[in-house]
Length: 330
Image 1 (cartoon, rainbow, N blue to C red):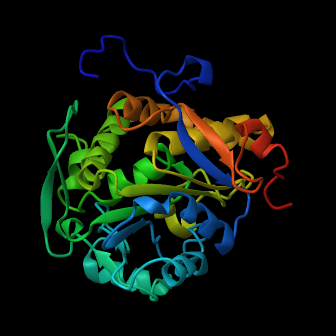
Image 2: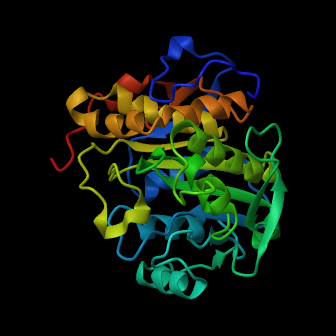
């Protein structure tokens, strides 16, 4: 990617016919329930082994849009071994998850008490290599990450105030970077503490993600839940913008680029009046560059086959998948 001379434009949606590379597989179910989440998990769970880290955004206090706790509890009860744990890191911004003490209080308020929750930067950090990055040669993550053999990335797909959208890439790239060093590396310029924007931010988030998924190799998978999709991230908690985008379903894959791309495609396949807010958020923050940059770094493909788990594994297009979605709140 470092040899590119053309200025990137992350505000532009890339149509499928312009994408290159092999097709990955992304599974899809409309079943937004604990059973649908279990169905999605079963489709991609064979890569998990040993001690499993579940990368989940547990949310700010009383956040209204996070993945429902009972759905996640069911995965732990029905599929994961006793030593599996939710993993989180403290935040770079000062708030309810800035220190480990504050973070544990917030975790308890939000009901994540049915399994271990490992704040992986609680006892320090470690550096992971970033191969072929434009900005980094290494990334600082929570030191406890190395205690795990594989990772289930469980993501609430939604908008994001700076990244345009928050999918699996944001969940890992920001969520595994530790709160004092790694997140500062991603967000901060020398003068303006929150000066990194647009394509540079997308690239830094993505390079952070690459460090973590390269660490786990083939033993990592991704589930994105397209429900309660505000244009705001779950880090905004109760201050998040109201949800106006229709609920869609749950996607699963072993290709991080493909699953985040498929989620964006599903948004763009909706009726314009249903997708306007989220499309504007993605484009105004140049969020499409997350996808292009992941593909360029060899992290996966923007081309994929969408497999309908509700219809015997038949192929389905994004347009077919969203044709019956109803406006939010109806």
